Image (cartoon, rainbow, N blue to C red):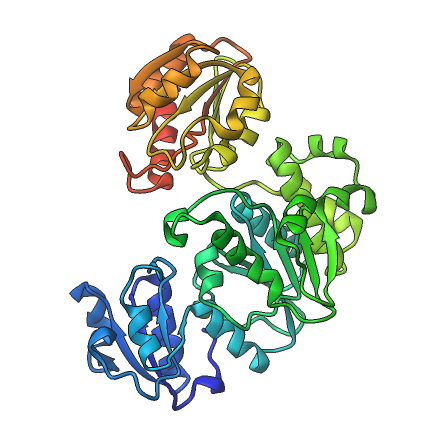
Length: 431
């Protein structure tokens, strides 16, 4: 695990003992910190009984504490822990901030931080894959993979690649990324920002604002202009210019089988720029792009049955995320619906020319059906099993059955992964 003398003999409270919370407590204890740990679930508290104080920090006197560490899932705008900590002048932080504090005592390294409403998991995994293929010591963490504090420190010259949600950025104040990437900003998670898109955008942009002079920032021109900032003294790259500046032709995307569609061209452009900044050669970058196998539930080609492709894009949880998936194929049988995050078709409307028929599911199914019926045939299926069966019945060789719901999954599934796994199982049943 990652430990730090910076935490020794200091007092910390940790609220939430799921994966990152457990790793945080273990790292703090191993560093000689005095820890108060709490989770509402008795089974989560049990491993720490007798090893540190176990009590709810909301009932504790936090005088003299160095920080309260919370899970990114704790909504700072509504949870009482924030005003309680504020009353003692104690910062509320996350494990990423602890990692930032630990960096000074780690072997010399670089940190790449990647955020954005859509595409950050793919871009993070892609950068990590290219570095690994080039034999650069690397690990990935943050919003993907293992908690960062649970991982072994990298040797000298290593690169930590972090996927960072706005929630994680809200909980860090000193993460100075050597390379920071802001892929895009579209409305999402606005309940955490009191319905204010400007607050959400400001949260994302703080990743760039925390950088110091001489470090590199990458963003789309439209987002950089709207935010009005790269950090002063950083070296800014605009995504729209990356490919031509790095000698990569857009037609080369045909050689990257797991990176199809316009959104993945943008993800690849960000990864190319990151890896160029880190000193990789064009050949090393191309080798990584060509061998990247993709992430589950993100444009994942599950099977081809009787000439029909079945694609699992369950991670398409809003219209901005699903629109690029629609743009990547033709003659699509689109499975859409769930728990809508915004009204209307959004960016998907411009891609409806790629859709041959739609199959609606979930709570938002009827609303989507009403919007889509004037454009293409629609079948109201309510559930995913009915939608897959109907799409398979109607699809012809050369067509694509695409699960990209443009909605959250929580009306019918635990999470988007469970929805994608169900789709995969249904398709395997067809085969």
